[in-house]
Amino acid sequence: MGKLNDFDELDDNHATFNPDSGIKVLDRSLLILRTATARPMNLSEICSATGLPRATAHRLLTALHVHRLLERDKDGRWSAGPGLPELSPASSDRIIQAGMTVMRSLMEKTNESVQIYRLTGNVRTCIASIEPASGLQNTVPVGARMSLLRGSAARVLMAWAPEEMIQSIIPDAAFTEDDLAETRATGVAESIGERDPSLASVSTTIRANQGVVAALSISGPVERLRPSPQQLYGNLIREAAERINQSLQ
Image (cartoon, rainbow, N blue to C red; front, side, top):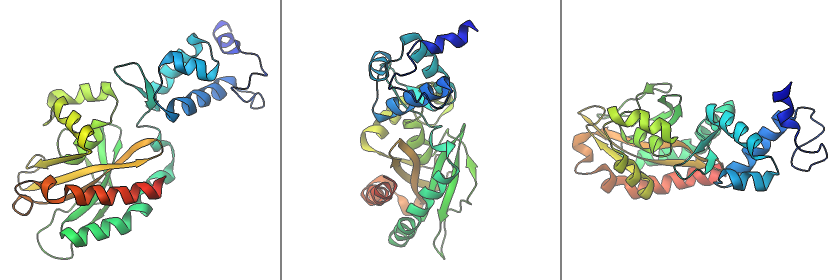
C-alpha cells in the first residue's frame, strides 16, 4: 500500500490530471507523455510543467522508457520514443496512404524501387514497396523484416533510435556513431553494397508530430546508382519525404 500512496502526493483537484478517471497512475503517465513529447525536457522541467513530485515523475518516466514510449538523450532530456507510433495500428496505414502517390512519382522519376520502412522492435519492416514494371530492380516485399546493422534505411532509423539501442547495435553495424551524426545533420543516408554487394540505396526520414516514424528509400543496382545514390537522388528524396510529412501533420 505504501507504494500506491506515492502516487497520491497531489491534491485530487490539481489541474494536471483528470480526477474523473479514477486511475491516477494512468492520468499522470499520460500527462508526462504529453508533456515530454511536446518538446524535449529534463526531469526538473517536466516536474515544473506537470506539478508532479520528482520521485513520482522519475518513476513514471522510467516506466515509459522501458516501453519505448519515451527516450532520454545524453543530456538527460526526455522526448518521444520509437514505440509511440507503434501503439496505433492505423499509424502505418496513415503513412502508407500519405506515401503511395509520392512513392509512385518517385519511382517514375528514378525508374528505381521505392520503399518505406518502420522500426519494429530490433528490426526494420517494409510497410510499402513500389517497383518499376520492367528492368533490373531491387524487390522488397511488404512485410519483409531486415537487420538494422546495414543499409541506408537502417542508418536513418538508427540515427533517431534511443541511445541504448544505438549502443547495442553499433559494435556489429556497418556504420559508426559519426555516420549516424552525419545522417542527423543532413537528414539523408546512403549505402553502397552494404546489405547486398549488388545493391545501393539512399534514404531519408518520414516525420509526424511525434518525430521520425519511418524511412523512405530509393534502391537499385549499384551500377545505376554510382558514384553516389545521395548525389543522384538526395534532393529528390528529401522533397518527396517532405510531401509525405506535410500529409502526416
